[in-house]
Amino acid sequence: MLGSEKAMAKKDLKIAVIGGDGVGPHVTEQALRVLEAVAKMSSVGFVFEFFPFSADEYLRTKRTLTNQDLTRFRKEFDAILFGALGDPRIPDNIHAREILLGLRFELDLYVNFRPVKLLDSKLCPLKNKMENDIRFVIFRENTEGNYRHIGGVVRRETNDEVAIETSVDTYLGVERIVRAACQYAKDKGLRRVCMVDKSNVLRFGHDLWQRVWKKTEQEYVTLEFSHLYVDAAAMEMVRAPEQFDVIVTSNMFGDILSDLGAQLQGGMGMAASINYHPGKAALFEPVHGSAPNLVGKGVANPMASILTAALLLEFFGYQDEAKKVEAAVKAAIQRGVTTPDLGGKTSTEEVATFIVSQLEEISERI
Image (tube, rainbow, N blue to C red; front, side, top):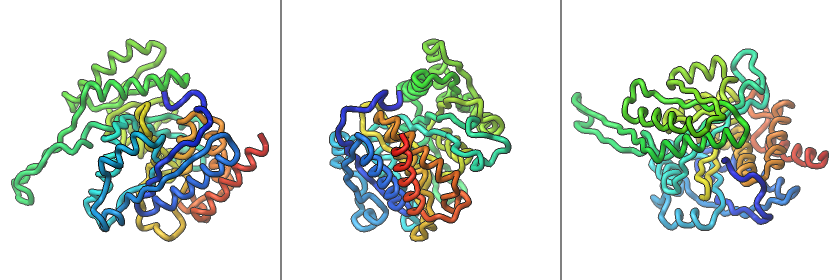
């Protein structure tokens, strides 16, 4: 199940905030404004603590995550609100890998949950698709696959160079992400779960996915199970996205398909996500990158970060508050209060200001 069925007992949620690089700190600031507005009109409260993990910090100190940081995240925080990482001054982006992948791996956040939800049909690049046609979620395995960085290079920069990249799939890793997707579908009253792999080519790792899938199908008899190869899944997401409720797939394929899904709902500036493991501090992250070319221009879309804040509320059981945030974002889109990526002329901060005002109006009406 994703998050709680009902709100936890009234108390402040302790949130670690990592703005990161590029536009990350600015869009995260707008998400915090929305959460603070929610706190004023509801029972939920927040305590924020800011962490300086970024390219600037790395260039100054060579510091990324430490064991002490990870211990604090495990023991002291309910969640982590993340911005974005990536900076051209660090070409190999080692700080981004060590921080973001470090959090995912060391906290064992094995679920990458990415909703694909169209809030307004005018944002969709597909013809004649309405809001109800694009409403599914992707469960991406988050701690295995090609992202374990196992491999190497011999005879580098010669004509005889050989590069090997190893993908890792374990029974534990595959079984728990498949089960998480199926349980989510069952809990939410959804019917269809599609597993995506490339088992016709990846004969060992994805044979494991196939066997786990078939075993799990016997346990969730009320669900409609289906399977697609990843290339066919990409085509079907464009041809008929309305056929999907829940997609579950590997780390690499989930990364790619969820970005395709983001475009179906209006672009990366609309895409939110959660990295979680039940019982551990969850990491809430907009899907977009750091966009260093947009820094200081005030045109970065804050909606992905704000919708990520809505996911945070939903995760901790504050369903009504999450719905209000989403409704406020939808109102901004409908009224054209958007940044240039969505065809508008409104600044990052002004979009957030409008969304906060809509939140207040919605709360007053209810």
